[in-house]
Structure formats: structure tokens, C-alpha cells
Image (cartoon, rainbow, N blue to C red; front, side, top):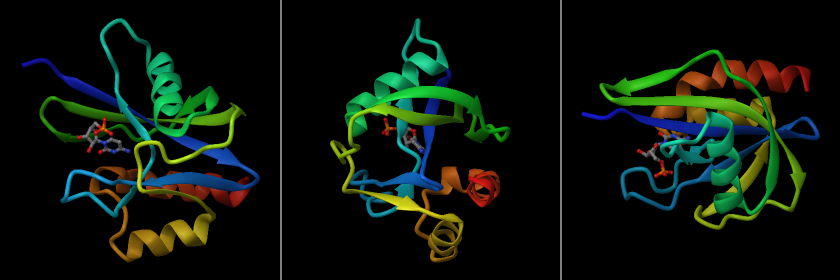
Length: 134
Ligand code: C5P
């Protein structure tokens, strides 16, 4: 079985983090995530993140450091979150239901309300720590 690698973008600007509300599948619709998607063969993590955020948000980003937590929800699936900043464009929800800029308290409240995609919850402590110093 080949392994699936997903990259997700932790996009920061003006002291806030950009999160996206999933439109599908039904069990995840309405929940918030870091936007991203599957790394295709031949791509680096960074290439894949730039492509995915262009497709999903219609922005160009510069890619920074990965978060330290790598998420392995099941055999054959690995998710890596990478910090990024917008270089050009105004983000819009091309594939998501909505986008939102959140601060640390907003993110904690969404998590407490059960509104974060389960796979992404492991990143919250590190994202909150980043937001506190943004
Ligand atoms: O967004 P897309 O459907 O291309 O994502 C590929 C896979 O990665 C899906 O299983 C999705 O649920 C998962 N994913 C995730 N957290 C993210 C982005 C994607 O669990 N932030």
C-alpha cells in the first residue's frame, strides 16, 4: 500500500492564523482545518503547499518552518503542517465553505466546541503558542 502524505498550511498575518471550513465530506463538513492537500509524486512538501494554497485559496505563499508535530491518524496517512505567509493575493474560499482569521482565544474556543477537524487538533497547542507571540 502506498502512503499518503498531506501538507497543510499554517498561514499567519497580522497576528492571526487563517483557517478554512470544510465543505465535504459530510462527516467533516462545517469543521475548521488548516487548508492543504496531498503531496503528489515528484513534489517537495513546499511545492505541494504552494500549489494547494493557490488552488484552494487563490494566493501565492512563501513557505517557512514545519510545525514539530507530525500527525499519523492511521497506517499509510501522514499530515505535516508548515508555516506560510501570503506573498500575493487575497484569500478566498475556492473549495471551502468559508475562511476565517483567528487569534489564540478564537482557536481554543473552536477546539473546545468540537469544531476543528480531528486530524488537525494535535497542532493546536503549537499554533496557539505561535499566535501568542505573533
Ligand atoms: O483536502 P483534501 O480532501 O485534499 O485532503 C486530503 C486528506 O487529508 C483528506 O483525508 C482530509 O480529510 C485530510 N486533511 C486533514 N487535515 C487537513 C487537510 C487535509 O485531515 N488540514
